[in-house]
Image (tube, rainbow over all chains, first blue to last red; front, side):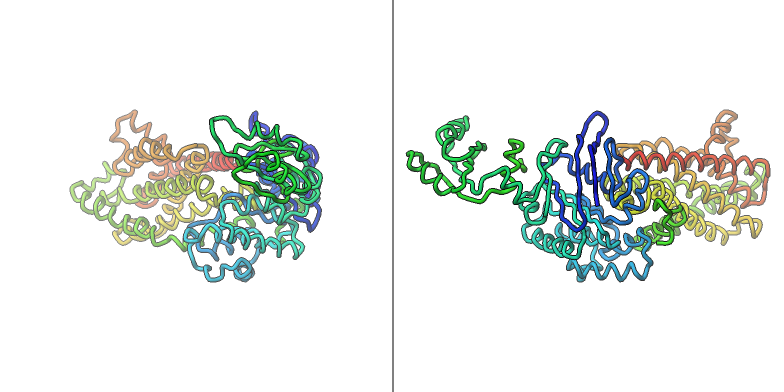
Length: 308
Length: 269
């Protein structure tokens, strides 16, 4: 569906995407995981055929976006990071006019709008003004709008940023249903749980480059341990006390990461680590044992956390 | 769809047929707010300036560019000036908002439609709206017996709509090139308002002195005002009418290029 070789994007002197290779296959859910400013949105805009490629090769649905932009866009659905709904129109009209952009007849546009409102649970809000919707409803309406042309490929840029947990789960459920219908999903996110929930395969992006690629389980297996013991000590002075504790605990796991407020000890068995910590006479104020996540993968690859 | 060419690029006509439903939907949702400006304002203008102020002014054709009353002199020019004001109002904040705040354009160009077609469709809609506003204005002044022939108002309306369209393209291109909407305030104060007052709508530009008259005749609005007036009062100088038309068409052509390239610069990043 999407193939990129050495793809770059520059804005003036700033290089947002520094040469990435991609191969997204039909029917999969593919993710770009990375912090803000990693180059995810710039990549998405090139894939959406609205932002010219600066260098390298890019082919979408077998076509070149520089030549076949309108044809590509006719087969894509795009859910942008910022809502671009028309606040002067009501909910249903937003869908109807958008369907017309794709050359869908007036009668079919109306039928499609009603069908999609049903799909995203907004039928009751059909006549409401867009500005009266909650953030989660606006997001769902934007997703409904991206589906008016029955796209083969759906691009979702940070689909759940700013939503409360309940709204996120509702959206994930709808995206999952789309995937089951055979729609190829491409998702950018800086939430590791979202990437784990939704993506069959993902790339970890940082500073315009791809740091790693694989399925979530694959990446965790490759770059992290099965479990993580989180250990927090009391803070006394200005210095981060966790730095000195890290040296004392360094041999308890495969790896130790120091964060401003805690230590992460990577090991196969977290409980054994905590027992050893106590056996050494150390008294942490809080401890937690958990499974490794993509957040740990990102920390390992870049030395930074996803959400600063 | 049958209108898709091999590369998927739509013809302008096909793109317009897809985008105009949006603009008409917006118009349907917001028409109440524009009723006052498009119907009541003309009536106020005609009564206050044409009838009441005109009552103090001699209807001397020698001094009024051939008009037999001040009412007949001022109203055709006012409609042309009103066309300009409607056009620049519709292409300043509304255009800026569509890529800066409301982002309606961003949603349009995510579809098979191109940036160029988005600009053309919006300008087409503004031109239609200006034409409709002027038609209402003309209808109102017809009741005051301003027009000398049955066909004059139709040609005058075309001149008024062309004036509006020309100014719409200029303001559109400007809106695409500014970073802050504060720039509109400056243009309205030092550009549009003086044009409105001094381009021959309220008094013959010969009153401005030789240099002032020449300056006024360089403005596109004067050409629109003059064309509108000549056909309304049936005092047509065909060579001057040709010049007026040529200037307005030239402004429209250059303005269209300025508007389309402006939006392309703004949206293609």
